[in-house]
Length: 339
Length: 233
Image (cartoon, rainbow over all chains, first blue to last red; front, side):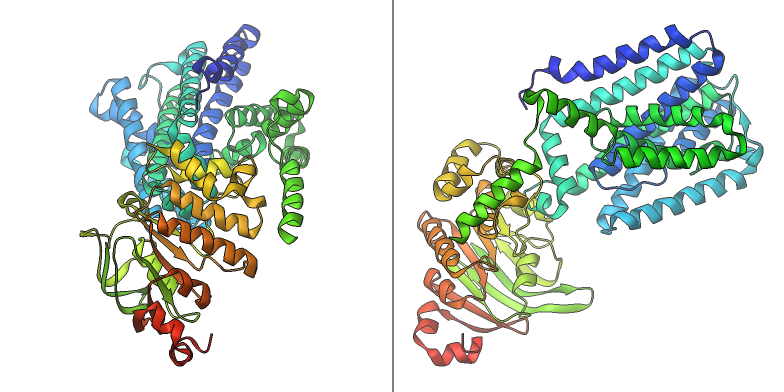
């Protein structure tokens, strides 16, 4: 708890510095800039999903739906109500937060298990998808909406888009870092281990889960709205489960759940793999699958925890008490107790 | 201190606890005895808000406890140690204890010294993960964690489950120390002998209702009563 804030902020600052330098290398290529920006979008979703699923056991399979809420609402508010784009993005963020918070509240109070929450939120995703298709007057159905001129113009300024997304991502990492450096971090660790024990320790599990869901959904809604702007076009399919939720889930598992940098590393790897398999044409899906299986076999806990423990082995001072020493102590304790 | 009146509780429409009334005064140690399935655990779970009571009232120091959620019950000064020893297995002994003080962070340091005095074994193992402790040590940790919340009333659900007789005796010596320090204890137990040694009064549950209520000495002295209510244990 008493870690100085400079040390706490160090990894966030390092990531920010590295990613801020990316446009120096690829800034000339609009294509590569787009890939880099989309990587940041995915990373933001994964940061939110890490808080939802990684820390509070809430398998929200409606990240895409919440993002579409942010995207469509911000665009429609500007188009039909002539709202200022910043205000529209703000309102869309709040709407996504309220929706996520509500879903979480219902799930917690009704005592839904992890998988049931997954099923319910997947159903929500399908309902939202169908609503977007069906409310033709508002959404243009499958045709979608061209968003150019309805936002802050991120679509026309790739560099600006990149840095806005980077700012959002760094802010979310900083917030994550702050959260887990505070008293709330202990409470979140406790409830991700055992909710009943946490509740019996005096931790208001409902409040924490709902607050995390609302915060994470706000981030998703905000990024969904920014995506609508920078992409120049939205349709139900750009926010579909297969386009958002699956990549987010894979990126988080690949990078490492319950870590600060796991979502970012996972999103970067996912984007890289996505690009590497592109030349395979029709065999893309196969190549994709093979690569992902290989990565998961290599990094079962996710890349970040594996790298952390590898670094820790070389630098003993970094090493956390490992489960192996604990197991040894258990054997010692067992024999003593048996005496 | 604790007043339970005509409490009904259970799961869905099935009532497991059927009209239990009991009273615990300040500083007392009370045992709730009875065979498996008598409703002891459900009674305790409904007292701390893990099961919502269907009917009746629970008052603690004059304030209603029924309808509160578990974290609110803890803040009222009632700590519960479940039979399953709800711990955080991946966290260390010390982290478990610190989380126990979550509801009452002030004075946590002194209480930590107090529980280490009471359970020196935990002090030796404070850096070890809770999931790797032996059964007896886990029970000590579960009780120590509950004490970190500085409870006025400690609810213990079958603390002797799965412990060797020697460890049960040791555990009950610690509980005796706690009782002398003024912690009020309500205890559910199948190990009648140990519980009768600690407690002054006894409630015997049968089929969800109170079948016997009286002094522990009465049960201790009468083999007949023990056979009638507890099946000869």
